[in-house]
Image (cartoon, rainbow, N blue to C red; front, top):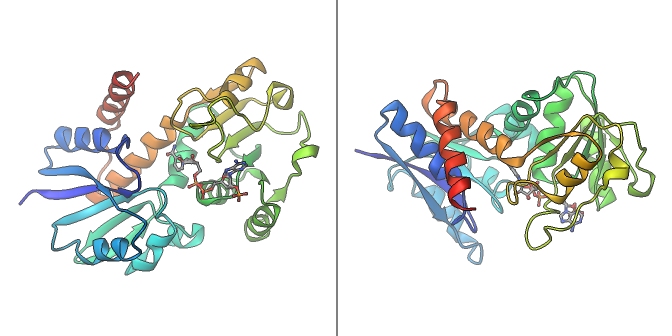
Length: 273
Ligand code: NAP
């Protein structure tokens, strides 16, 4: 019987995950399909019911996106240690009717960065202290980076900094020339505020690489500012691709066909232009 995989979130209509995973299934000859599970957050029972009915619906695994990455933890029978540490799940595997939660956002971001730069001992500023920032901050520390965090809500930045031994940066005192890598893990720059950027070229002098994890638009205002400052840029779909490869590897226990997934992703992005 054909297995079902998909993405749980709201809204998910524009998700790029189906094209990547369906391309991987095709390449590997896996009899499965990857679909959209749009779960209305207005009724709190919806997510619980979805999780309880996975076997009934032949669901072998699913990705999790906003707004459910943290809430999903409650419905897991087990978690992978990384998901537990970062407190959010973006990947669920139905393993013998037990739901096991994983987090591939962290490794996805690291892989995207490592395509351009070595991380060890780099001074890295993360903008944001939400779910994605948390996963990225933890993994960067694991890779030996010196991590700094700025967040609109200071208490959240402080709590994150205490937990993972980071340093908090005040926005009005962002030291120019200190950081080698800057990562935006806030939604600033995504619709409807595509003209906005937390940092401008003058803040980014001396930065080698700026990564924005927003996937639309591909070149955010922050990345335009980074180019003006002479930095290399990493667009958000690189993290998306690598986190999807991590999901495939969890579900199927083998290396993801990254070339096919990448091709499908860029074809879809081109089609949507
Ligand atoms: P989240 O948990 O809701 O965190 C959002 C963060 O952004 C918080 O730190 C929040 O600050 C900050 N923020 C939100 N609006 C802001 C504003 N107007 N001004 C200043 N700061 C603001 O979200 P998330 O899951 O971490 O996701 C963050 C972004 O990353 C989203 O755009 C998401 O689509 C993207 N993402 C991309 C990938 C990928 O694969 N490329 C993966 C995961 C997430 P406060 O604490 O002050 O509220």
